[in-house]
Length: 74
Image 1: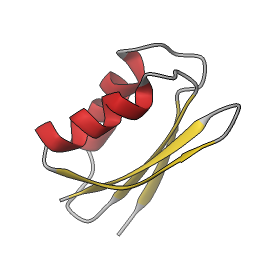
Image 2: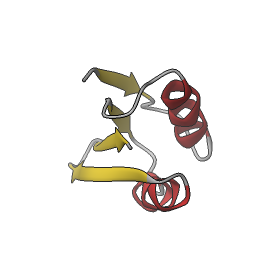
Image 3: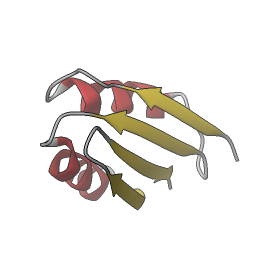
């Protein structure tokens, strides 16, 4: 299992999700993708991405400056 971190701070919707999808294509089942975002809409965007693409959303940690989304490729 590999863990990849993708920093998309400063990017607005839909770029964080698009970059995550591109990164996930090269990952294998069981790998983890950590995405750091600053777009407030990213929380809902990554929830939808996981539902649509059969990914497991392990966590979403929000702070005042950013949000960290942890996804698992199934």
